[in-house]
Image (cartoon, rainbow, N blue to C red; front, side, top):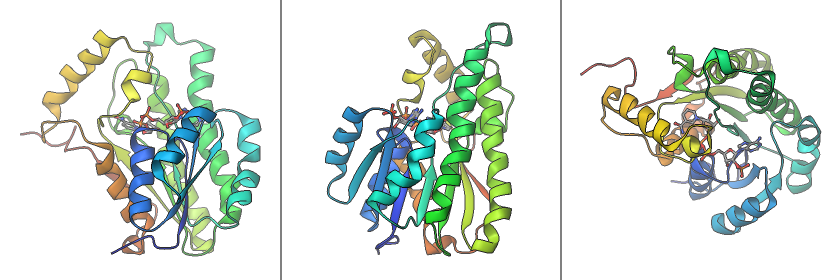
Length: 251
Ligand SMILES: NC(=O)c1ccc[n+]([C@@H]2O[C@H](COP(=O)([O-])OP(=O)(O)OC[C@H]3O[C@@H](n4cnc5c(N)ncnc54)[C@H](OP(=O)(O)O)[C@@H]3O)[C@@H](O)[C@H]2O)c1
């Protein structure tokens, strides 16, 4: 059954990984999808791969000018948005001694400012029955060295899920979050970690994942489809942890 038939979804940061997998699953479930990313070339490539139910907008979630134009650009494609998945982002890692203002501003711009103003821009295009989904992270649940700024930024997004849920309730727009555990995407390759450091993270995290593997982007996408659909009609202000049991379950 197509759970999102005739719905229109905007997914920020959907040229790869979780965002792209979600676009694929939304389309499989009957939705039309608008994807964003920072580069025209990857947007064009992604739209071709996703097919005729997809369109794309170049929009940098970390740039206020782009955020201010997001609503109008989306409206030019569709006057109504039924589902908003706020997903754009990446992580930068460093110990406290090496954090500078640029690192802080970059992460908070993309993750916090980007999430807040994307929602502000798109809510006027949403009707009762709409669904907003925010991508948080497992890092809000654990203290993890070198992730002081990324974790704090994702904790702000976690907080948005609750406040937005309160503000959107009278509009009958549901707001929920997905907190992914370690997922096999371009995430780590795009971070500032070296190959050796990425391997180090994998060696450290993997033994702690009770299901014994990294998750696939499609496994987050299916939860996003659930949250976007009528199946989740009474789910509001929730955060779903999709993490293979890491870090709370021990085997
Ligand atoms: N993978 C994990 O283990 C994991 C765990 C928890 C949470 N997350 C979160 O999941 C989200 C998606 O990450 P992913 O794992 O799927 O990584 P990914 O494969 O690197 O995908 C990131 C996506 O975000 C886009 N993006 C990055 N910066 C952007 C910006 N400033 N404006 C607009 N788009 C931007 C990228 O597109 P362009 O490069 O084309 O702009 C890309 O489409 C992120 O918010 C991340 O923090 C990931």
